Length: 208
Image (cartoon, rainbow, N blue to C red):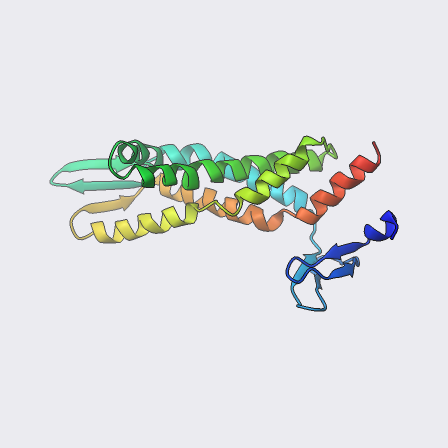
């Protein structure tokens, strides 16, 4: 089979069926005829959307991690905590494993997902496709499985409800910024198109 014929085929990620690629318009979806899973869908300006969403998430990083997420008051004593101030005490106690997990899954991985998606979409927006984007895309596809910032938010909400019986508790601005950053980190995985990236990079390599 010629390379030109192979370029027209796409493999289903669920059942591995090779299917001839067809063009779809915006909001249309191409389904596998064997298992009916979604192969790809038509999107409009998805590179620009990814650039905007990831850029918005990056703007939320500093306030999300440094501003207080929760303010507590008891017997006239007030205390505020943020994401970064909660990690060192956990690392220096018997809960250091939880501290390492919090650092990785709530801080490092979400930031890397936003940074890499912004970097890649910025290059694609201006039609600049260096070869190192290939390795970055592979890293990005692995990282999106490990971003679990939403689990941290759920834990905070549970703690917030339980503390209401003993303390006067109020959510701080860091909580709002963290939720917005988490939302951008999740949304960027839906706006980015892996198929478009690999096709664009392949076309760029053919024209070198």
